[in-house]
Image 1 (cartoon, rainbow, N blue to C red):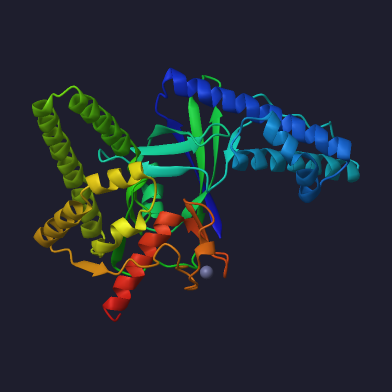
Image 2 (cartoon, rainbow, N blue to C red):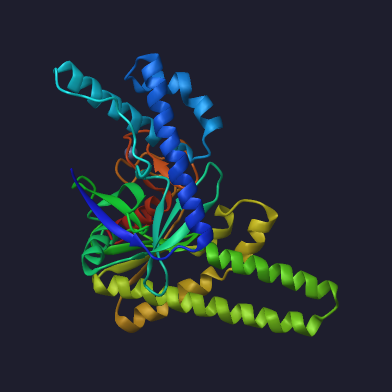
Length: 372
Ligand SMILES: [Zn+2]
């Protein structure tokens, strides 16, 4: 296993986002220092002990994502360990202390990278203990592009991430890419997993986020209701037309990108047999309404005809249990999906982004269907 770190600048986050990131940095610094003091008081370097004795209180004290809070604890412990080991070896050691600018570590399952239809890469991460996350575009060079292609090509996976500010006030992220050889991409097939939170995820680790789209559709629905109540029915009809054309445009962009990616890798595209998609999306009434309003079949048909034009084969597979199956050992269990977004196999311990697992399984199934 080899870890490569990728440093990239955040592209001018707006004032609101800057404030949120700054607050997170301050809180993280406080949390690291607090854990360090607690470890000294308890006279321990054991993670289990520190966690047991302090974690609950820490959750109340610090408004941080739980994964990030855990990272602060580990940071404090490692500072204490290295201090003690220096002292033990009779070397000069001053009591550990954290710089105000200590980088905030975000766990690998707590952030995501995705690409906008325009090609810009965006990083999304939590800044507090709540559910909300912020998304900031990244400045990417040719070097970044090469590494991200590795991530896209499935030759590495996402590790943890650090976010920090340099002296001139610019924000940066350092993303760890973990290269390992144990899980190979099913050769020559790109699986596509359709969803709502992410519109589509490809088995080679390309994510198309659906949040902005969902947000816009919700606003439209609100407006339509208001217009309806005001009796402005012709206006309602006109706006419904706008929305349909806009969705069509999004589907065109998405399908074009997906087919381009497959073409570039000389791969086939594997899609879910879409009859199952509504059954899968169980949820609130509101959620179901969004679902019925999104034309997945149109997206699939666009992919199909664009693929046919460029000579990319399309294979349909049964999507049943693709989200619960481990792509490494084949274990099928609902316990493999501990959280909505993260997959961890109860059998072999393999873990990855849940949607990517779905896409990998779709690719594998297509491979099986081909008898390869
Ligand atoms: Zn497994």
